[in-house]
Image (cartoon, rainbow, N blue to C red; front, top):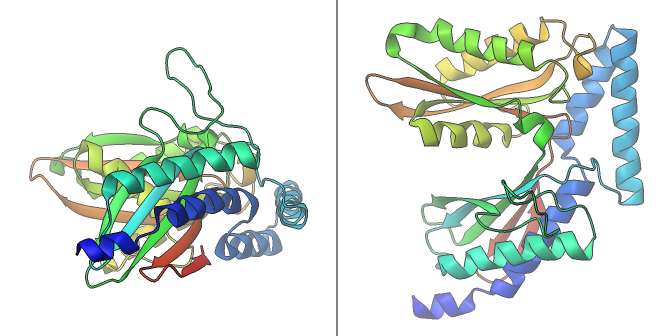
Length: 297
């Protein structure tokens, strides 16, 4: 076991963390691009179609010129999936991710969006006390680790929320919460994007479920048929609202609704909604024990 620990190259992990941050800010995942293109093709509202065409031109330009997709570089969030055979030092891993995010911010360079919540002092590093945000998960028998980097911007994040319902409120209360939240948010979260919903768990875990939901590729459905049906129902209802791109009217208010869930307490039923704007940025890398790196989204 100690021999396997020695094989882990934390310098490599730091470099991957840096590259993921930069790549996520420059290149939109193919599933998001395809969904935006499809939305533009079927859009019947002239204003909405113009907005979507402008978004698509902006995406193409950012890729061609290696520019940022959006000036909001977001909070750095790393979601880790660690294989059972990929034995590592958690503290050194945390340091490597933090240093990678810092180097990305200062070497690219781009605007650091992370600052002190009271003094508002910005060190222009994208990291600091409590940042980057790191979520840990584990893969049975895996001999690799996956790092998913999500730079979460504030426009959509500010429209997110949590509500603690009781079982007596029923499923209809959950649906109403989502629809009301979307309508009240209007154009603030830069629709159309992904709406991630967490259901169950506790006050602290339901927000993570919603965050994980927005990271799922478009076109995927929850493995549970009941939640998959609820995703489809909410997606149809939201797009029927007519809110449209940037809240200015149109056929597409969301590119997809994703739900993640867990068991919860018998006397509660929490729900969280995490908005993701049209620039649903993410970048993924798989690192093998042998040091090989495979990039993806």
